[in-house]
Image (cartoon, rainbow, N blue to C red; front, side):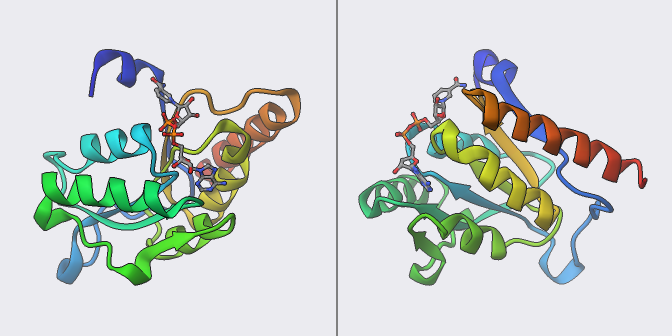
Length: 163
Ligand SMILES: NC(=O)c1ccc[n+]([C@@H]2O[C@H](COP(=O)([O-])OP(=O)(O)OC[C@H]3O[C@@H](n4cnc5c(N)ncnc54)[C@H](O)[C@@H]3O)[C@@H](O)[C@H]2O)c1
């Protein structure tokens, strides 16, 4: 990841009581991408080689089949053993984000890299599911979505304090 990317990214501990380790029989940190364009694929490529993994790429969501398939092929070429996104984990449509996140366990990682207008909706579901969320700026671009994001920030802060 470049320094610019690191500085502008937002990493959020989205839920409560997130497990520090996963079950021994499947201890990989699972990663899903929502919005499979250039930045999403770039963020996934940054996430997969992490040293404190192992990390596995397990689900994808987009509204355009070609974007999803091109990104999947590119990541598969780069990280063959870590990319296991079979056809039944490639989701299309405006509700695809929910299906991709439903493939994850609490404490896994979702990368919403969609246009900003969709982010608060997708982030809300990530919070509900207790997922770690990695988002690039801009996370919101107008009053209503910014207020939605701020509310979610308060909610996650309250939850993580156990209040
Ligand atoms: N911080 C940075 O340095 C940086 C750099 C590049 C992009 N970005 C941001 O990241 C986001 C993505 O940028 P990009 O260059 O990858 O754009 P892109 O157009 O290549 O990718 C966006 C993807 O999201 C998909 N999409 C759109 N609406 C969707 C929805 N409702 N559900 C699921 N998928 C949906 C599109 O089909 C597309 O594949 C943008 O918000 C952009 O501003 C940030």
